[in-house]
Image 1 (cartoon, helix red, strand yellow):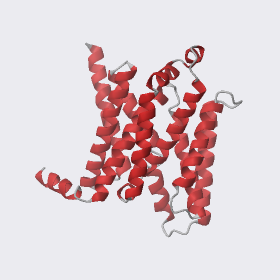
Image 2: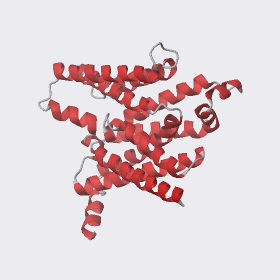
Image 3: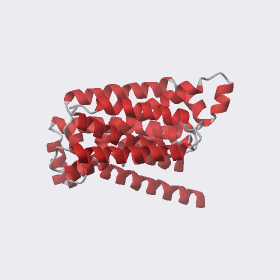
Image 4: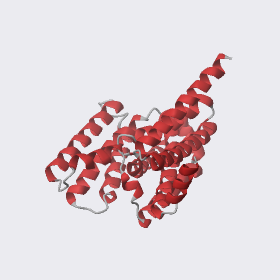
Length: 282
């Protein structure tokens, strides 16, 4: 134990580890707040679909040769999020089918482009890192950290400022419209926030594991709490703790950061599920 603590203290002297911890905590917090909304609105599949869109957009950025892929990835993901959330219900194709079509198409096109135009000698490794998380979380620049901090702060501020409206739209959109709440506007805000979180989270857990970061903390919180506010608070705490534990374990054991964080979330969900069963049997 002493050796582990010494190893951690040694690692935390390096700025790149501090940057990774700050970004990881912020992304986990934003994902948990967003997850409550998506799960309750039954849009949890959106996160997975947009992660595939982001992968395709990142492939385009790589082919074009941009050093900062966010210049293409962010706008394309935001646009797809808006279209999926706003048009899904009115489309002749059901919402979940639309998401499936877009996600599969984006993944296939992205992988095809990477294969055709790749200049890397380790294509399989690059794709695997993008899908399941990579060491890029440990190579963040000071600028990238500040971009993440600003975007995360904006998302948290939006959630707090429009908390009551988001609550109303989440639980009963038709009633919210009847009371004069511009539900379409808040759905648009939710769509943009979803896209931003997905793009930011790709550096942490990879495109295939983003939905786990969004869904598991909320599902864990809903095992023990029933009110919206309690679920939001518990989900945020669980998500941040799992992110911290996952990154610490990753540093000590040398495991992949993204997968370790997701496994931590799964373990917490299992604990909360057992507590719920024990509490219900009394």
